[in-house]
Amino acid sequence: MSFALKVTTRLHKAIKDGHFGIFTTHDIALATEESVNDNFRKKLSKGVSSEWLLKVCRDMYALPNNEPTKRGVLEYIASRLHWDKFIYVSLESELSRQGIISQVLFGYLTVMTQGRSGKIETRYGTIEFTHTSRKKLTEEDVYYDPDARIFRARAKRAIADLKRVGRNVDMINEEVVND
Image (cartoon, rainbow, N blue to C red; front, side, top):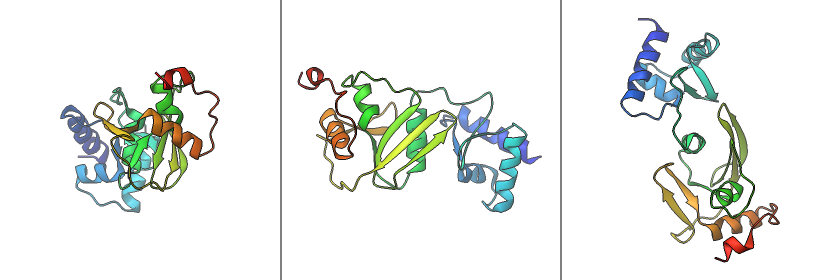
């Protein structure tokens, strides 16, 4: 069985069995019972150039004609990229979602992380990670969104994060916040 057939068959089965549809390099290695090394990475790169595999971002892939259409694609990618750090959606993304700012962000997700700050471009949009050294968050600060499978800041926390990182607070609709 060719590498391409092996990968696509096993990833399609994983999606059919409930996988989100975005796979890391290590997910693919596990599915094909291979080791991640330079040769394996070259095979994945060839898969992308041959178009039987789609590159989502560094070390993440999807299958053509079977890309995820579920809500929370950027949230899923963010969680996988910072799998070993506590993260939560905050700043403009969460304030927009809660209707506290009128600006609506499409294809852009702002996330607070205990990991490194940075922007990641994906085929589905941009994820901006902003570092926070805050260690103790309570249920008053964040809550878990089971649909998107990620923690989200409550309004008060998102506004405090916005101020702490020096972002524009002029767009905050005070009437909505005070309701």
